[in-house]
Length: 99
Image (cartoon, rainbow, N blue to C red):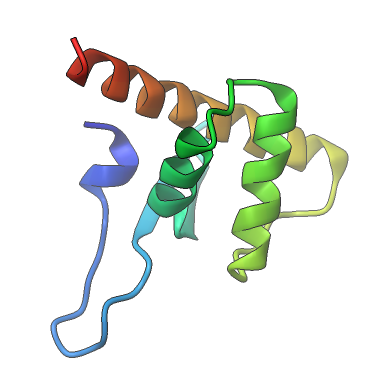
């Protein structure tokens, strides 16, 4: 199970919402994002490979859900790196479960 699945939060009295996940960046910085599990599932269902383009697509989808992603090129590259790392774990988990 990946780190973002372990850190999901929910509220007992609100309607079902997209899950919250914590991303861990090199250097110890963390950021909370909403909807990553759902995005990874959709990306996987589309048959996307782990690539720079997939990282950019995940960022776009996170932004569409009102997640803040810094606009600097450096920050976006760091986000893409961390998101692709999470996607690799997601794909590996699905591959391992199909054996």
